[in-house]
Image 1 (tube, rainbow, N blue to C red):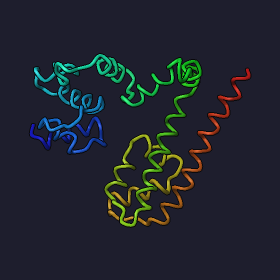
Image 2 (cartoon, one colour):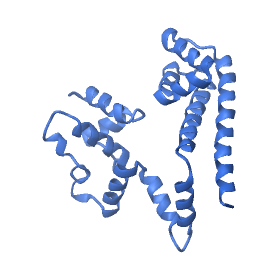
Image 3 (tube, rainbow, N blue to C red):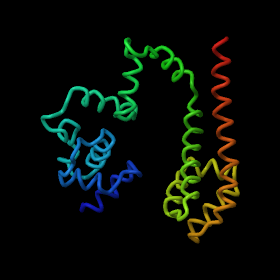
Length: 210
């Protein structure tokens, strides 16, 4: 595949990955080491290709002989649970006996937190991204469509906020939007999602007493 096709393939696994990031990686023009997310995306494209040699591409191959042990460990963690370098290192800091010692409570929190919390948090992030874009003087409709175009989020909108789902369809088909009306509706969605998140946390706090 050519560079454009390779970029499109990368965006299937990581929609937000930028063109310069991929081109710099391909052309060897990176001034800093690529992130684990970038490497993981490139590896996934290679491993799902029809080229048997590309299917053998791995982290240590891409990082060559300069791979550090910490990078190798982070790569394995990322492959298993999808956490970025920065998050992995932050969690390691929280487990540092000289500065923080939060490992017990972090384990408790993540173990007892239901998956719906992260679902609602993701929906809130998408809603906020759309709101932020609409608040720009010259907002980009393509960006708004891209933010909206998440299967799980759209299914939730169609089921719970049909008017917003209908607006999305109009935007996608006619490429136009009543920004004031959409912003008002998104404010309702945002308040609803914040309430759901707070309720999940409230229940978690109450369950500590049981």
